[in-house]
Image (cartoon, rainbow, N blue to C red; front, side, top):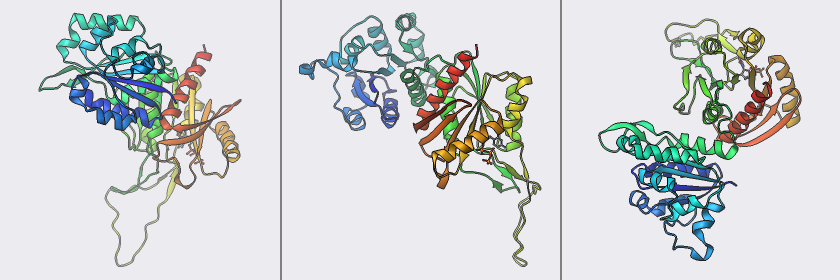
Amino acid sequence: MPRVVLGVCGGIAAYKSVELLRLLTEAGHDVTVVPTENALRFVGSATFEALSGKPVSTSVWDGVDRVAHIDIGASADLIVIAPATADFLARASHGMASDLLSNTLLSATAPVLIAPAMHTQMWEHPATAHNVALLRSRGNFVLEPDSGRLTGKDSGVGRLPSPFSIFDAATALLSGTVGLLSGRHVVVTAGGTQESWDAVRFLGNRSSGKQGIAIARAALAAGAQVTLITGSVQEAVPAGVNHVKAPSAAQMLDAVRESMTQQPDALIMTAAVADFRPIDVQEGKIKKDSKSHEIPTLNLQQTTDILATMCSERGSASLPVVIGFGAETVQSDEELMALGVTKLKAKGCDMLVVNNVAHGAIFGEDYSEVIFMDANSRQKHSGTKDHIAQALVARLGSILEGLH
Ligand code: CTP
């Protein structure tokens, strides 16, 4: 279980650290919160203690018997400071040890992720810019603040990045994928398609898009440029992706084709694309006939297999890596792998991620269990969809590296 120290400084954005704490603990991390004195003016220690399951201290004079001011930092796998104020950036960049958090930072050998938040004038002040440059030169990862509404009526650069993007950056640091995909362009499809049969009805499926969106977020955190093509999804689309909506199988085919003109490095097809669509689509709503009780018949035709088509056309589009997903309803891993081998060959992709969706399992859940299959290897992964996304991004990084 990775040990994460969450440092919280005294700014209004401290309330967002609570959401970040929740994401970190739900991912299974052991989190110790170290707030500054001023952070506790914004969020009470009870909130941090209840959510982390650990006592919270700001002072080097607590826990003296276990040398807490050294112990917390030295035993951490990752330090995350969110929000980091201008004052904290100044103290940290100059190696000051004036409270428990700055002591913790000085005694840590783990990677350090800093998410600043302050008013635009303070962020743009040469003193802050110098302190950030100093921290970066020492190998700390300092995120750029977001732009938008600040504490008062003002808006500009200085907002704390969303807890999700801080969490993604933290996960990438823990799994060693930071920078792995920098300079790469990855196209990800996510969610289920909807095939209309009249003005109000469609044929759909149970896909939530969670896995595809988690992959897009992990690829972003690994430094990639990401095009995310979505059908119907139940998750927020992350900021920073080039988002293209493609509700139906035909629109998704067009969107994927269009994205190929930018010569991406990889296509990851997690979308649950409909295999069949109604032949006749009524312009208006089909009314029920209450006299004859006649039931309409739905005549279907097959859609284009986007994955197989892209694989067969990839020579001309020069697409280095194609990864497909396979959803099967099976009784055992052996059966799953046997179907996976057939699907891998039929699609012609480099790798297939197969999972067992019997009895509606996996759809909309946070956890998943998959097998990564290619021509030579099988690798089982289970855990949160974020965890599986990190593993896939790590694998993609090594495939791309191996191609050069
Ligand atoms: N796929 C696609 N276009 C389709 C159908 C599926 O690109 N019209 C892609 C999916 O995005 C996924 C892979 O093919 O990456 C496998 O999808 P899956 O639903 O598991 O298999 P199908 O090809 O639809 O075959 P079957 O339903 O018979 O298992």
